[in-house]
Length: 406
Length: 114
Image 1 (cartoon, each protein chain N blue to C red):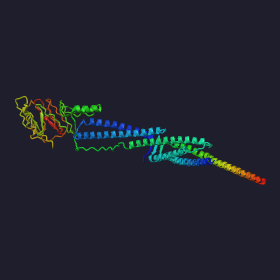
Image 2: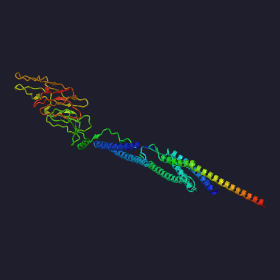
Image 3: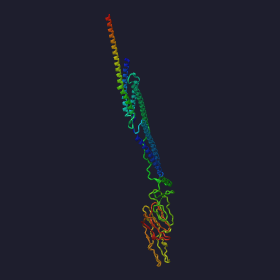
């Protein structure tokens, strides 16, 4: 049994909605997958190939699904048009369509049997011997014609009914046997591993390509990407005031800084990384405890020996950051004898005894100011030594030598 | 005379049969009309219902003529013919009787003469 109860107007609207929805899905799908492809050019992630492969599979699935829904949509349109045509063929406006195949069959059966009976009546009348003298002989003849007309009319009606039933059945069978859509199932992503660190692709050209495709105007980061090496310069962090731009590494990044940290200067104080010892390589900078001898016959104080030198075995240990001076840096010991009455060597003011002790170096600002450009090299660890070494040209006044500890 | 009566009697018979046949067709069409209301309904109209109703109306009209006019007329005619025949037979019988009377009267007169 075929039962059709259709509101043709609503079916038309349904079809239009399907078409619009399908178009929207296709448009959204294109946007999403285009942008996904552009996004993946920025990341050098081992999951990227997995991700891209899944994307392609998903897109294929969605494309197939859209194609199927398109076919369904067309089937609905065809069915709707079939019903409209049948309605018009019946001489009606197509608004609703209600059909029952079993009842239609019964109707046609009754029409057929009616036709048979009427035909029989006509036959009876045909074979009837009507006396000419019968008053209504003429009327019976008219009845004969009338019955003939009725038979023809009923025959046509039966033919129409059969045709409409046939068309409706055909339309129904067409939509019944049409393709269906399967459920669209997109599985969640299955990444290969839990990658914690993802490296940004360091190639500037790739970054530019990605940025341009995204139509981004500015790079809001203050990190510059240099092509030569994988080094990142953060210009916003303070620098050594050594007159030379010192490259500082960001402490929170994983990027390896391959910068050569060595600086050259004859008066330089070298921070030896391995030993973390502070060596004053200049021999004549050795501060020794010495007695200052001031010869009488000179009018000057030979302060030659008063060169304050000391071995600066300052061990800079990262762990405890203790600077241990092996030797006393006591200068200007008390046994300086100034015996020249006219001469004054006033070293008292400037005498500075620097008692070596445990000198703790803590992390403060690095200020190295020497006329001879003493540079301090940095390590991975921020050395903020507030060291002021005033290394004069010839003499180093010990009294100005101090290490600011805090 | 008898032949004509028989002819009309046959006509009457046929007309009665015809009426029965028409009656059947009307009933059958009534069934068809009822099913047309529940078979193909498009835009709140039943397909072919009106056409079938028209046919049924025509048949009913013919049936009514048959039953109300033609058959009574046939019956009437038959009676008329029968009446006519009786009259004729009566007249003949009377004529025959009259002739017999006259014959007998003539014979009696001849007997009297002798």
